[in-house]
Length: 356
Image (cartoon, rainbow, N blue to C red; front, top):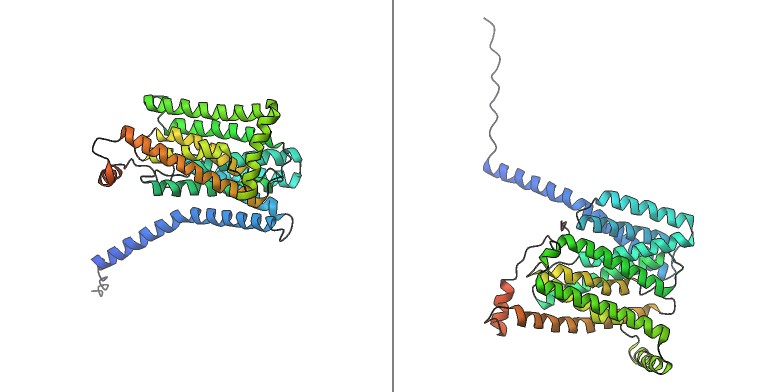
C-alpha cells in the first residue's frame, strides 16, 4: 500500500484584526487613487501660476508666458468640466492642444481668441467653484475663493498677449460668461419652474441693474457732456491719487453682492444659483483687470480689493434684508440667528465633486 500523501494544512481564516487592517488598506488605496487626479491638477495649476509670475517679473525665458497660460487654461477647463458633470479628460486635452497651437502659431487673432476663452472659463469656474455659505463668514470665504480663481485667470489671459480693444474685450467676455453661467444655472436651479415669484423678481432686477450699468457707462462714454464726465473723472482721479485705485462699479455694485447673497441663499433654497449667475459681473472684471495696459498691476489689485470690500458690505445688507423677509418668526436675535443657521442645511456636493 502506497504511502498516503501528506495532508495539506488547512488555511487559517483571517482574524478580526487582519480583516480590519485589510479593509483599511483597501480604503486607503481607494482614497489614494481618487486623489491622484486632484494632485495632478494642482501640480499643473501651480506650475502654470509659477511660470506666469516669473514671466510677470521678467525672470526666465520668454516662452514661460505662453506655457503658463496653457497650463492654467488646461487645468481650469478640466476643473469646469469635472464640476459641471462633463468629460474633464477630453475637455482638458482639447484645451491643451488648442493652447499649444495658439502659442506655436503666434497669430494675433488666435492669441486674442484664446485670451477671450481663458477669461470666460476663469470667470465661470470662479462662480461654479463656490459652495453654499450658511454664515456670513462663510460668504466672505466663498467670495475670496472666487476672486482668487479669477485673478489667476487674469494672469493666464494676459499671458497669451492678446491684441485687443479694451471695451470690446470686456463686453465680449461679459456676454459669453453670463450666457454660459445661465446655461449651467438653468440645470442646477431646476429650470425656470424652480425660480418661484421671488426668484423671478430677483433675476429681473439683477438683469435690469446689469443692463442699466452697461448702458449708462456706454452712453456716458459716447454722449456724456464734458461737465458731467469731468466731474466723474475728478472723483476717479481723487481715488487714484489718495487710495491708489478706484473700485470697478460692475464688480462692487452687482457682482460681489450677487455672489455673496447667492451663496448664502444656496444653503437654504435652490434659487440661490440664479443669483450666483450674476456673480460673473464680479469675476469678469477681475479676469480682465490686467488687459488694460494703462493700469498697473498694483492699481488693478487695489481696484479688485476695494470692489470686494464695497460689494461685501452691500451683500451683507442684502442678506439681512432677505432674512428679515423670509426667516420664520422668532428668529431675531443671536439665538434666533443660530437656530436659523442650524436649519440651513440644503445639501450640495463638495467643492471637488460634480454638481450634476
